[in-house]
Image 1 (cartoon, rainbow, N blue to C red):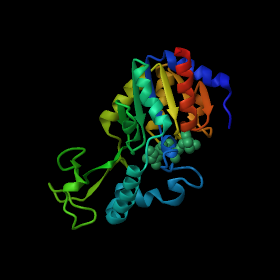
Image 2: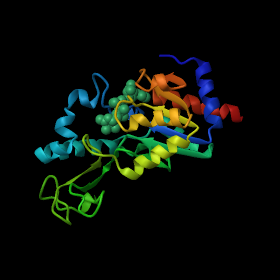
Image 3: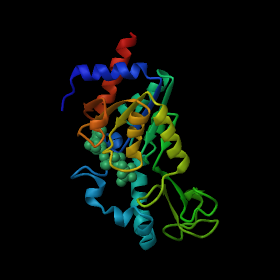
Image 4: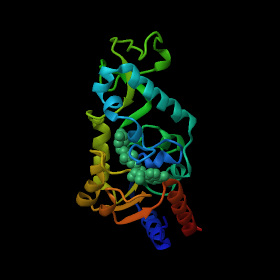
Amino acid sequence: MTIHPAQLRAAADVLRQAQRLVVLTGAGMSKESGIPTFRDALEGMWAQFDPEELATPQAFQRNPRLVWEWYEARRLKVFEVQPHAGHYMLAALEARLPQVVVVTQNVDGLHKRAGSTDVIELHGNITQHKCFANCLGDPTLLNIATLATDSVPPHCPYCGAYARPNVVWFNEVLPMAALERAQSLCLRADVVLIVGTSGIVQPAASLPYLAKRQGGAYLIDVNPQRDELAPLCDLFLQGTAGGVLPQLAALLEQSEG
Ligand code: APR
């Protein structure tokens, strides 16, 4: 898995001149922090667990306790891990470029913890909870530290429905404002840096198509495997987020020195 130095230099040149950068990230972005991806053949979450049993509203209705406990285990894991050098590199880009927005499918909050200030969380955030009935509007966020602990899952204090993680499950729509902002940023972006997504889950996977075909953006893809989006991209950098992004940062710095 080697990247030709000329490819890295080309990517750094494009990034250096970016005026409106969108960074689209997926589970591969967090892998080197210790959070498994979903679709890697052996270690991926969906190789070990059935999303139909754990990640749909129907699964939650069938077995709320099982789903709640699976997400609680994942939530606690998120607090144990740290952002890696790639997350910090993306946050540091904000000081260098006029506009950097991170659009992430990840629910772990690691981009914000690394210091990125403009992060669109397309699939929600696993550290938050909401009312399953969204009784006061979507999302009706709940502070679980204040919820009665006599039931698993706990109940919404306003309407009595179960509390649930504030993530987007299969068969659910994405938060409308987040998706619309991501779409409009992609239409206006001059560069889209894609990191660690298989590019098969919609509607996130359609964002690079929008950026390229309707907006004419330059697309750079970072992934150790050729993913579904690689053929659409102008540059495919075959490597990991934690390996490639710091190399790009070093090239950006050199050029300033
Ligand atoms: N650095 C960069 N990319 C990596 C790394 C790494 N260290 N390790 C693996 N990858 C790549 C894989 O090659 C794969 O293309 O990350 C991608 C992960 O793909 P998925 O597991 O499908 O994750 P993602 O694309 O984020 O999935 C989208 O599916 O089930 C859902 O809601 C979940 O948000 C998730 C959505």
